[in-house]
Length: 309
Image (cartoon, rainbow, N blue to C red; front, side):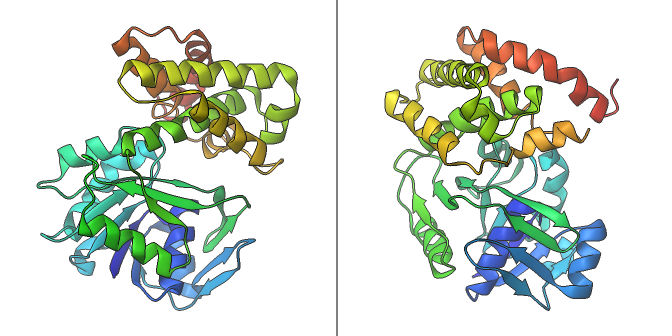
């Protein structure tokens, strides 16, 4: 399969490298020092599941020159999505599928509104990974997976083909029976741990072992579940236990990408995670006091990072 990866950071770099290693024709759309390093020395991925060295690697900042592909893997941060549309559009032809792997529950709808035709397949991923240095991606450990599905939950040949493409690359991938439920299951984990982790400067290990933080995460998860339920998503106690299980399984010293961005003074995915919970809660009339406090405390730092304060 001919695949373009838009965003070659921790997520795009890791899964794109696995796909290339599995024999797919992968081109990375990147820029800056990361692009220069990949062009000069390839892409190196460190992982407990096996290191990868792609050299040479197909990488460019010119999507027009790439032409149409069969699959666009969108792996930018949520706040970069609008800008990324300029890179995505030249890659999309009549038979192209666009698969976002962003955090949050709104990316597929936003892409579908921006792109003509029925191009977008909803998706999510599980991974703790980062750019360690230009041209060097580190997977910190823990389970990695891809979950995808048509936005109307129909089982189609294209989602089966995408799933099978990941399987040939030895990436765990499955088609979700209900993709909205799967997206909210991830939000149930990532928004509370990102919000608490960023506000408290805490690792996953701290959130597990400090009773005060553990209770805060639990309350934020329960609020997030209530919002999803109010919007018609079938979330129950099993989903809550799964989210808590992900917290237990996360690498002790690791943090969420949002927490790392906030601590470093960079723009983050606050609006797609804690902000989305608060925004959707207001729409559905659901009280979310813990998430509201986390959002309010983090918002000034986010505005400063964006140059708005």
